[in-house]
Length: 341
Image (tube, rainbow, N blue to C red):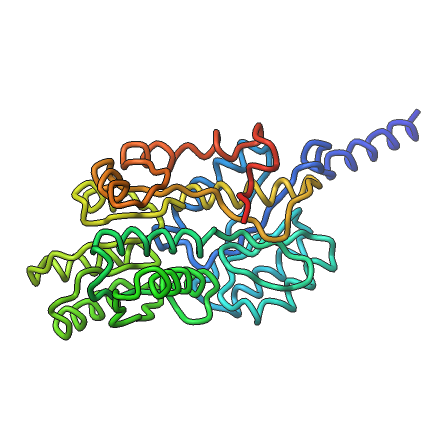
């Protein structure tokens, strides 16, 4: 009897030491973020946590604090932990290839967020950037009657998203509005202070400047702050669909914005990674469903001038920016995770 009790006790101790069956089946996603202080990344995480709950997984977010070395170390740690999938916002798309390949060799799906990385097997969550910024260029071109001086604020050279948005904007203007002159294209590294300095220089150097386009909304906000203080009445076109753009859009100064939305981006990436961890088949390059945002009045003016497109106003924008569970949740088909190119 004592031996039976001893055996039973040993089995009980072993069982208690092991994770429960439910715990063992938990999918765990590791997220390597550039930082978790910037408001965009804070919003991403907030909605990403909602996605994890909706999809029944756990997510652990780690901040690289802008350090490539730390980002690599975070990914290495996720590999050692044997997470179900890894998401990374690449600080350097080329430098991360070896560690991404290491994760893939370990059988862990890897999602590179907002940047196209070619590591022979990873997935990239991107945006229809060229097409969207081409439409922003058209909205500005039509609003200016096809001529005038404008400028463009971009992110950083070599960043896939920034470069693609710049290309879509510049090439469309050159082809469709040859009388519009781009007097400056300024890399800002997404820094509002650099956008402010660039806008001030342009407004001083080019008194006939009519518009500034931005590959990210925060840059347009910075530019408008300067322009308003200098008494200049510019128009703008931007990207992100941030709630802070409502006043500019409703007033007609922002003729077109593109809604991706930090919350939607965070939810979408967790949804994609979970589906991959569950064995669902997805294309290597995924493109987020986006919306064109403008005021109804501006849309009517653009339509009257021959530019037709589907749009939402800022009231609808506020709804769609938080409607991610309905748009991208576990009940929608896998096809909802990407739009055609």
